[in-house]
Length: 162
Image 1 (cartoon, rainbow, N blue to C red):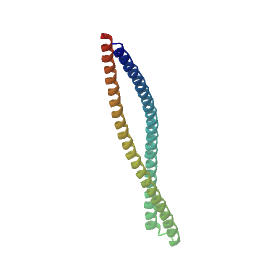
Image 2 (tube, rainbow, N blue to C red; image 1 turned 135 degrees about the vertical axis):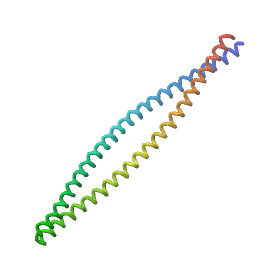
Image 3 (spheres, rainbow, N blue to C red; image 1 turned 90 degrees about the horizontal axis):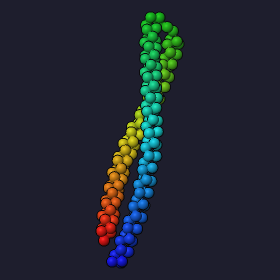
Image 4 (tube, one colour; image 1 turned 45 degrees about the horizontal axis):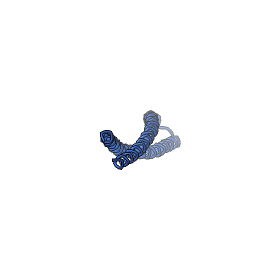
C-alpha cells in the first residue's frame, strides 16, 4: 500500500509539473496571439489609410482628366474658330502629347499599385487562413489540457479514496 501511495504521489507530481508547463505554454501562446492581434490591427489601420489615399489620388486624377478633356475641347474649338497659325497649333499639340504621355506613365504606375494591392489582399487572406489553422490547433491543445486536468482529478479522487 505504501508503494501504491508512493506511485500515486509520483504520478501526481508528474501531472502537476505537466499541468504547470502546459499552463505556461498556453499563457505564452495567448500573449503571442495578443501581440499578433495588435500588429494585425496596425496593419489594417495602415491598409485603410492606403485605401483612403488611393481614393483621394483617384479623385484628383479624375478631376485632372476632366480638366485635360476640357483643355482638348477648347484646343479643338480654337482651331475651328480662329484658324490659328500652324506654329501655335504644333506647339499646343506637343503639349497635349506630353500630358498624354504623363497620363500613360501615371496609368502604368496606378496599374502597378493596384497589382501590389491585390497581392497584399492575397497575402492578407493567406495570413488569415494561417491564423485560423493556428487557433484550431490551440483549441485542440486547450481541450487536451482540460482532459489532462480531468484525469488528474479522477486520480486525486482515487488516491483520496485509497
